[in-house]
Length: 148
Image (cartoon, rainbow, N blue to C red):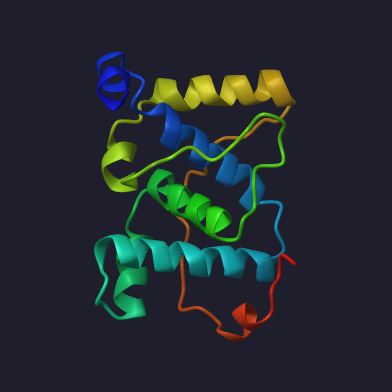
């Protein structure tokens, strides 16, 4: 199916959907909830590209990624916390390699997904213009289960 999606130019739909859903949901969280999701995103990013690097090196590389890539790692954070999108019939798409798959995302993929989310759910969400600024996690924030 991956080959067909790429031939049809649909390779960017999954990372575009995950990024926009994560953008929508992340903005609705409290700061402590955001920190928990961010911690999981940092762990996923480190495991995928920097498994033996210190956390500050991982964070430095994550901070240099595009907002699209970052939000796909935020989506991983939601997945790790077993938090599904709160919108009917929406789900996290399988994105094996956010670095490679986000390169395939075209502005049309984002626009089509934005239009669909607006039409089907009445939400107006767009990808933030600035990259997120990840920081060394406050380990006290993760000792409590923020999401019950």
